[in-house]
Amino acid sequence: MNPGQDISQNLFEELDDLYQDLILDHYRRPRNQQQVADPDICAEGHNPFCGDRVALQIKLEDGRVTQVGLQSHGCSITQASASKMTELLKDKTLEETVILSKLFTAMMQGKKLTEEELERLGEMKAFSAVCKYPIRIKCAVLPWNTLEDGVKHYRSGQKHR
Image 1 (cartoon, helix red, strand yellow):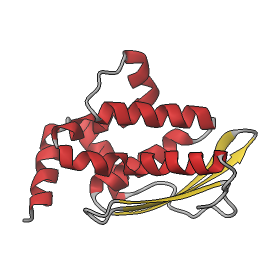
Image 2 (tube, rainbow, N blue to C red; image 1 turned 30 degrees about the horizontal axis):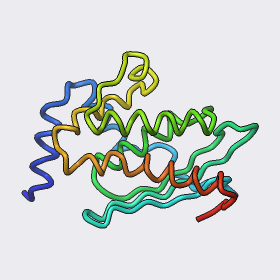
Image 3 (cartoon, rainbow, N blue to C red; image 1 turned 180 degrees about the horizontal axis):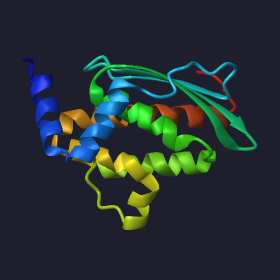
Image 4 (cartoon, one colour; image 1 turned 90 degrees about the vertical axis):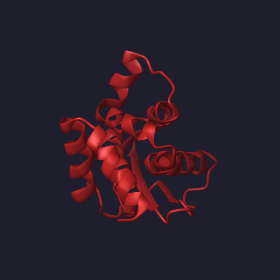
């Protein structure tokens, strides 16, 4: 077994059953894997240290996310975080997506969130156990960083990156 597998196994052993099931379910059956045609936001993220990759497409209507497409390759944490993120983003405004991203990143950095902030993250709080493994934090936040990069480019008038 390689060191990455040991870390993943330890991580899953520390998660309670509900959260472990959620993360494993999203890893095994990622949601929203289809590519969105003619997206308003398109971004790609890559972690050169481990090879994880995320491609994200978002379609907006009346300022809200109506479709999210995701193609991800990498470890279970990256893929599960990306999959769950796509579900959370639907029907949100761009401002809400950025707030969620900042909250998730803060949680992953070990910052204490209020009950209201944790409630906004919903099931994404399952990833809080990843904080015990600093090397895996980048895996969990890669999809969120990709989202923020895409929103930034969209707002600057660069539709695609």
